[in-house]
Structures are given as structure tokens and as C-alpha cells.
Length: 211
Length: 125
Image (cartoon, rainbow over all chains, first blue to last red):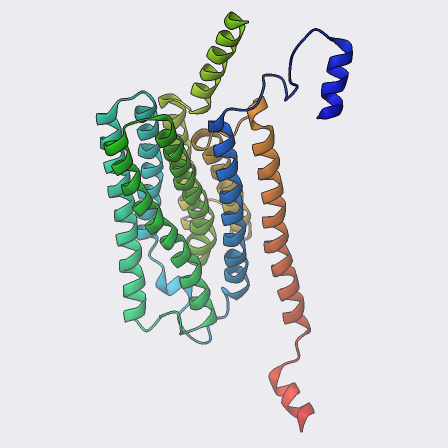
């Protein structure tokens, strides 16, 4: 950096510029999004360990039920659509908030919350049904890995719903000011990243497991 | 100077609006994602693909859908603001690949080299 500044001074001694890249330092918004992106990547790396455990243990049913007998693909499809559409409404909510259209923001985020809660409802019903069948997390290594992986994603969705409620409250109390919009951007990144993890989960656990 | 910095500010806020995406990008992303999810269900539930090729087909569809999410929902692009983001993403993908493929490899190797329990019991006697 200092070398760059020195050469800039040598070649153009009258230009009083501080050399920090082409157009000066990046805006706070870009720096915040970058920092949160690093967190999301570390979260995805944590998920990769759970995915690896599931992939290794998915055949170890210890005489208990296998995924083929337990998974309901219709439910998995509905869950997928819930998450996809909640990602979409979340994006529309961000657009509305950026353009200071608060009514549109409330509508989009109410839909996002409803779709996320529906997803969680289906997942909890699925877990309860499996435990009632005697296929709880203690039954086999396969089921331990299944409940850890899918449950971890569900815990993230729960955290996301709580965060969503806080963001709606912040918009209501503080209005769409710059720092609130930055937090909103981070929330949307988190919500979209959960969707990416669900794509991997649906493919590995449900679509490949139900065959 | 005043003029110059004002122009620069305008240029930057314009760039940021593009960064935030638009109604069209979100809708296109949703359409692509729904199509790819539907294709995954079709591939796994019907005999459209040659049976041993189904896992590979599902993996390709899943990776394509993750790409759609990254581009249309998370707005990871090729612009100068995205250099660091893309580099961090590449590093993340490297670590995820190492963790998953390394675990599968090591565990498959251990499994293949493990002695059958009956044999182990015989040796302990």
C-alpha cells in the first residue's frame, strides 16, 4: 500500500490522493456484507462436517428403518417450495425497504415469516412422526446423523425467524435508516444461504435416500 | 473537486442499487430454482435417467441450483466489488470439498480395512 502511494507521489506529485484502490475505500455497506459473507462461509463449512457425517453413516441402519421407509417426498417437496418462495419474498422485502416502501416491506416479510414457519411446522411434524414410529435419533447411526443434520438446519431456520421478527421491529421503531438497511441485508444473506444448504440437504438426504 | 466527488458518489450509489438486485432478477431466480427442483424430483422419481447415473444427475442439478441462488439471490457477480467475495467463496468451496471428500475417503478406507468382528474375536482368544 505504502509502496503504491509512494510511486503515485513520484509520478504525479501534485495529485493529493490517498491510494486505496481505484475509487477510495469501499462503502460501509460493502464491507459489512463482506464480513457477514465470511461468517456465512464458516457456517457452511460447519454444515459440511455434518454432511460428511451423514454421507458416511447413511447406510448404518443397525437393523432399523432406512430412509426409503421413512421419508415422505411429498412433504420434502412442500418444504422446498416454502423455502424457495420465502427466499423470493425476502428479496422483494429488501427491495421494498430500500425504496422506502414500508407497506410492501411488511407484506413481504409477513409472507416470509409465514412460509418459514410452515416449513418448520412440516419438519417438526416429520420428526414427531419418526420418533412415534420408534425411529428416533437413538435408534441407529443413520438416524443420529439424520436428526443432527436436518435438526441443525431447522435450528438455523428458527434463529432466522427470530431475527426476522427483530428486523421488522427495528424497521417499525427506527425506520428504514442506513444501518437498519445494512442489518436487513445481512438477514437476507443469511436466509438465502439457508436455502442453498437446503438444496444440498434435499438432494443428499431425501432424493437420494428415498430411492 | 466538489463536482468530481459528487459524481463519484452518484456512480457508487447506482452501482449499489445494481448490487441489491431487482424484481426481474429475483423472479428469474425463483423460476430457475423451481424448474431445477422440479427436474430433481422427476430425475429421482422416474426412469428418465439410466438408474446408475441418477446420483450424478441429481448432483449436477443441485450444483446448478446453488449457482442460481448465488447469482440471482445472493448477487455474487463479476464486478470489481465482488473480487473479495468470490475469492472467499472459492476458499470456502475448497474447504467444504476437502472436509466432505476427505471424510468419505478415509472412512471408506477404514471400513474396507477393518477386520470382520468374528475374526477379531478369534484372534483375541
